[in-house]
Picture (cartoon, rainbow over the protein chains, first blue to last red):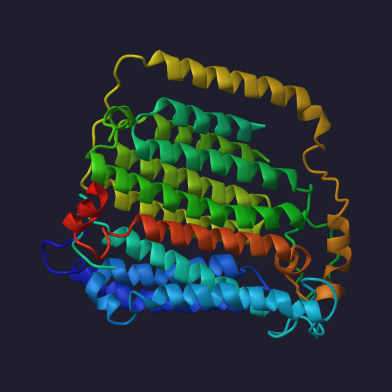
Length: 152
Length: 108
Length: 182
């Protein structure tokens, strides 16, 4: 997107991003973990976490973000999340039918009540976050005229 | 109700436009209308949102089942939009234009 | 209810603007306005989970769409043969509205849904699952199979986008042409 001048945007955007990106990440993790108590769930929380990384990437340019998260390991995280969800589903088979909530439900309004629901939330958020970040990286790396400048 | 008018606006936009990006905009508008229709079906008059709160006031709640379906549908709509945009960018790289009439002419 | 109708009218006007305007960037921004209106309508209809998800997904799809339209703005050129898609669009809308008006009396009255299955979820959701968020308990405990299908669809779409947006592989271009010429 901006490969002509110095990477990233102006210094106002960079300073504000340094404050808000971690806040968005923390808020996303809060929504993922509290999916069964209050609003949220895995889907919205996963998208919020992906948005925090995209926020960093838009403000600072591609190369600085790629030093923290490698390009190839994003797909590994998505696969881990999907397989974890499938494992939780199959683990319910031991009790009764397919998706049985086998951990005993404890007192409500606490963080670890409601059995398999928080674990399913975390698995879904892994799939959503890694998938959307990989999609965004792929769309950014795609050059406008189709030539192969960057290797996958 | 009025969400059907929104759906018709979206479909009309899909049929009329020649730019691929505006076709994607029309598809997204039609998808908004469908999700809105589901949530409109699930509304109960003077209902609460389907979350319990520490003060145990039992009052009628809105229907939670279509809300769960629409939650899934919104995320899948995002994935569809991303796929269409990736296809559009590939088409632009190959043909140099976003116009679907000219893309149909340049074959092979 | 008045706020609901005002927001719906705003959304319809925004959608008409998004479809009709010639500039692509203005069309995408109008789509953002329609999405924001939709999020507010979800809040009025007492669905906070859906409203948060809609807002965040709208932001992400706007980012992706603007990425596709930067620096590549083409003028919208209407050419001959314009009345066929317009007539098709108006004809389709007329048929849809006719059929919908005939089947509206079968739908339950707005504000009184028939909660045949959902009454069980509302009554015994807290004791059976222990989750206070009933929508989360529906998508992760009562209807978790649908969520498995949705994760599969999401994963497949992510793989498909990564395949489409990959630059031309690791072979050079002349090697690929050599294989095709044999």
